[in-house]
Image (tube, rainbow, N blue to C red; front, side, top):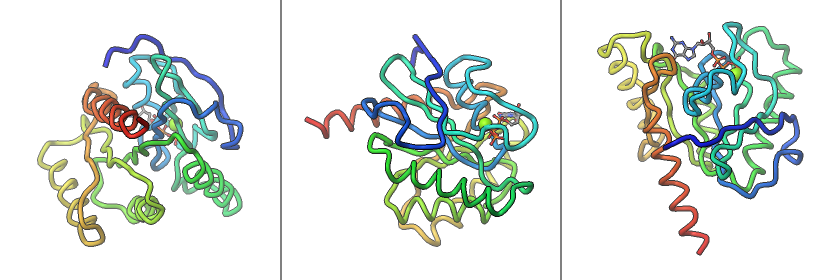
Length: 203
Ligand code: GTP
Ligand code: MG
């Protein structure tokens, strides 16, 4: 997709203060440091649209970006950051789950998974929660520039096998590298196809 405009709109802790739900919305979630903000920058061809950091826990709020004046991308704070107190973790869970459950225009959640690792309990649990709520999600693997294709295939196979123990079918799977700009068109194609299906279902 050609990026004509990409702008930051607002940061929130409260889904009720998010921008008006008038465009299709896509959220990016996953462990702290997995590469959510970097991916949004890569998708939007901007270096500093979403703030990134080598230290986990950089993104703390629900951040809305408007792309080409008709798509919202949402950068969310990560989970699984060890240095977070129980109270903070509970606050995060409430904020994220309320947002995911209440946002009427949210069409897909991209769950970012570190491609260097085999299936991780924390990510499997998060996807299980989305599944139970009936929220559609994509398994998006990040940082594939950091490993060999044989290790990547091994980790993907482990995820698929583990997911198929619980699920009848797999969600869409996309492999990416923000560093090497891999996977951009796969993400946009899925978004554009979903937008088309959504607008057909409205008519
Ligand atoms: P939080 O906001 O803290 O939850 O993190 P995040 O998931 O938004 O991660 P962020 O995009 O800030 O990236 C974390 C670190 O991973 C940074 O040092 C990035 O440069 C690095 N990184 C992100 N994507 C890639 C990638 O595709 N390849 C490589 N090699 N590094 C990456
Ligand atoms: Mg971030």
